[in-house]
Image (cartoon, rainbow, N blue to C red; front, side, top):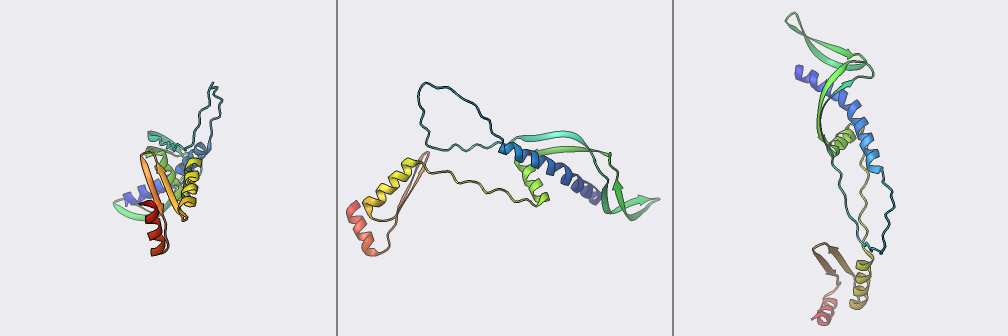
Length: 174
């Protein structure tokens, strides 16, 4: 029964505290740092660099309720008897909380509580060199090709649509 009371109290605090944290971290993810770096030579960059920002949060803190917070269906011990009741934690009630989450865990938890869906991640753009090479291979072989290029190698897929087309491709390649 006490466990249920604590769970309901935690849920009430999670909705208010973590949703605010999620909104602030979402704004941090959208922030940009703009600066100018002078260089004397041109540096060609033809790739994307994924960056993951994951800040651990391990903090004892105190949260003060900003509004009355109802907790329904609570059992209290009164004169040796457990009695079901509803209670209200008044605005201004301090609550000791230990946060032991990462930013990503906090975002996920807040997203679940708020019902917000995550924004879809953008697929990295293919470099112009890879797209050009794929186009040249397609023209040379006369069929669809797919080139996937990575840091340590990649793969080349050559498509064919009949046994005759496969035979012709093998004759050209071998």
